[in-house]
Amino acid sequence: MTSAANSITRDVHRLPIPGENAFGATAPYDVEKIRRDFPILQRKIHGKPLVYLDNAATTQKPQSVIDALVNYYCEDNSNVHRGVHLLSELATAAYENSRSVVQHFINAAEPSEIIFVRGTTEAINLVAQTYGRRHVGPGDEVITSPYTFAATGEAILYLGARPILVDIDPRTLNIDPEDVRRKITPRTRAIVPVHFAGRPCDMSALRQIADEHGLALVEDAAHALEATIDGRHCGTFGDFGCFSFYVTKSLTTIEGGMVVARDARAADRVKTLALHGMSADAWRRYSDEGFIHYDVVEPGFKYNLTDLAASFGMHQLTGVEERWARRQAIWRVYDRELAGLPLRLPAPPAPGTRHALHLYTCLVDDQRTQVTRDQVLGHLHALRIGGGVHYRPVHLHPWYSRTYGARTGSLPHAEWVGARTLSLPLTAAMSDDDAADVVRALRLIFST
Image (cartoon, rainbow, N blue to C red; front, side, top):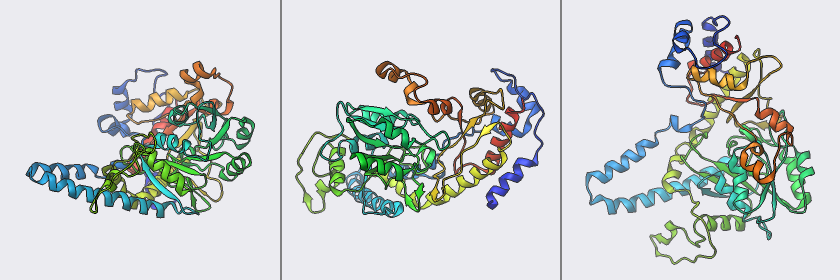
């Protein structure tokens, strides 16, 4: 265990755990009683809440960039014209430098193209329109996981296609390759596996299935920036990899995402579609060589990542491994200190794989406790400690029930997990005290 992990462990055991009956069975919670009986957690009641989001922005200073720009423009209006030209050069350099750094970071086994876009939803939507001679469209089917954020399915629905949901492996929480095989029909055009919480899917099995049936393989790697299989980054095994740089991710551009494409022609079409179907983007049109005319070659979208957003992300690239290591230290303490509680903790990573450690999700074991998942969330909230649910299976949301007749019992593993899952705080910005508070709080909750 690392020195950081040892520090957290010492803090966990430094103070006694209060006795039983710490909370009532239902809300509202007696905050004054908590203050009296559990002074070790007063910091959470009086101070800033501990949230579960893994937000790289908490350890960065993007506001300083904005402040510098505002100060520059406010000093002298004559700076505006000169500043626009300067910013265009700086932003373009940041954007292009980000591409080269990310290309090196993902260490693709084959040459890959990098396209920055507005988010993972847009990324999946774009690549689904780009694959092969038969693009995804109305009447087509795309196989994906029910255990994901709604955006994965929405990117498919935008094209008039239908997301076909397959069940998950209850241990890994990733899609089950055998159920993928069972769900393939003549209308199937692509498979979109989701590397849930940062755990790599079985890409070898999925690649084989996709090749056997002539299907596109599009990785939803929104959680998996740091994840690898045999040293190769997730997002580089499929025909496309789609990443997220949303504010909850370990590297953030506030809003943003990335497409990794193995085929240069496909990448060019993604670039064109991402910016109004134009043959040249803004910086190439207004270059030092003079104005360059462009053509609109097909209807496109406004899906490009802004250069300013790219500059935020660029400055976080060098800290990706450091932030991952900090999350790993907290993860190991959770594994150690929560082992005796009625929780099913995350399975260890498969041999040869690296977990991105984006979410620490555990399951409330209802065979060993009468405390429900939602009660745990409520108790944590009363102590100003954030918790999350990742996820309620997509097919159980009302729209899917109305539109496709989705019903409870159709994807039993996803439903079983979704009813019990709980995400704990996990961020590189957490202190040792924060991690210790989470452990103590859960011990209190399950002592009732």
